[in-house]
Amino acid sequence: MGLTPEHWASLRRQAQLWSGKRLRDVVAAETGRAGTCALEVGPIYANFARQRIDAAATRELFGLARQAGVPAALRRLFDGAQVNTSEQRPALHTALRSGLGEGVLAHEARRLALDARGQMDRLHQAVLDSGVTDVVNVGIGGSDLGPRLAVDALRDFHDGRLRVHFLSNVDGSAAQLLLSGLDPARTAAILVSKSFGTQETLLNGGILRDWMSGSERLYAVSANLERTLAFGIPGERVLPMWDWVGGRYSLWSAVGFALQLAIGRDHFEDMLGGAARMDQHALETPIESNLAIWHALMGVWNRNALGHASHAILPYDERLALLPAYLQQLVMESLGKCVRTDGTPVLGATVPVLWGGAGTNAQHSFFQALHQGTDPVPADFIGVVRPAHAYAESHQVLLANLLAQSQALANGAVAEDAQKAYPGDRPSSLFLLDELTPHAFGALLAMYEHSVYVQSVLWGINAFDQWGVELGKQIAGELLPAVADVRVEAADPVTRALLARINSRR
Image 1 (cartoon, rainbow, N blue to C red):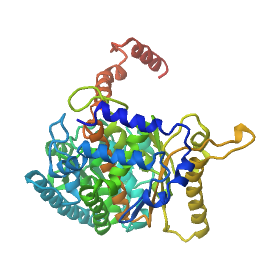
Image 2 (cartoon, rainbow, N blue to C red):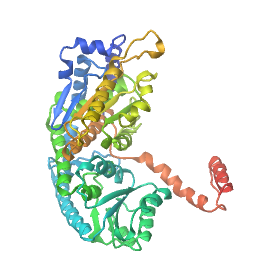
Image 3 (cartoon, helix red, strand yellow):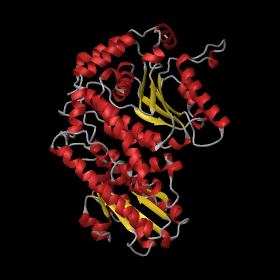
Image 4 (spheres, rainbow, N blue to C red):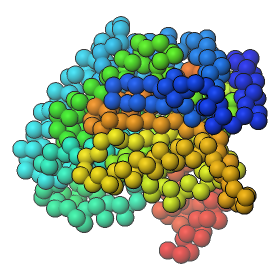
């Protein structure tokens, strides 16, 4: 059920001890802090030394994680317990990449995942044999964000045989722009929708089907074979989805088929291996040296003890430019809850607003607010030590900026002119990947997944449902007749006025 009111009060008391303290002074006073607040897991090095927390509060957080049963909760996740309580389902995305779960459900999920990998390999070869040059992934939300990020992030590992594109927005402008550069005779499409009832995906899929003059080069990833067949996609061209994998956790499944087409089977397996390595670390490593738990605890400390309402994701690598958008869904859809699993209100604030952008572009956009704004914004800085290009000076400048921004936010700077002073005390964590490989990429995303789950355990909320997205979709369906036909009147008075305005300008 998460932490108690007494736990939250204890965190606030710890935070009050920071009154008058400066982060740079605490770092200087705690001998070896840069080392004691650092963890290394496979290809990921993480440093939490610039979080606005001292050793005593960190130890208290470890104790709270233990009292909340975090290690046991992670075991339940892997073993297939019904952690998605509102839908009475397990969340077995870990079975897609590692066989660490115990029990019948976890073993069956692993078997199904391996069977699906074989199906992906066969369809991969079929696509190559068909002679197409371009593949369009049609999906939205988790059926788009994960594969889109991965295809972009792992561009240096594309095998060059197929170009992969993405179509998600129901806005027809997106389809028009994409299709204007493709040949319908040399293009295939993958429609990704668990229910095969997602409005945006079906509309865009219909546009592609008409544009290609048929469905013989259409593939699907779905749990609804009846609907895919009705759309013109037979079962042998459909890859499976299951109700025990949520969309935002589904990159590791056949939802990642577009990624496999781009980078090849071996690199896809390497990405799964990186995630599996992080799975083992999160499940088996004690709290005090567990990277996913550290990350989660820093998030809870910043949100509940220090009261920070937003969090920035700042990748200093252009290949990870889409990471903030991907993490917006993973974090905000999972943790954007105000009710606990027992139906009672949460005891404090939950998810911060997640946002960000790629450095150094972001420095010339919103960093002014990070440095001198009234509201401190905790941040995750992410860098890559060894680039995949030969422009050494460019990479040196990039790394210098990465290090400088983290330092400046933490330490600040004094000035005679108050407008030129930097308050400092802005907390951040810094993550370094040796290289941006499929293995490292998989480990990084899995770390964020486990951090999200740990935070949900501490808050006592369900990380695996998303009822908040349903109401707007329901109302949109009810309003569609009124948008399509001026003779149909909307019930809501403001919506009625807005429709009148739209109709008057058509």
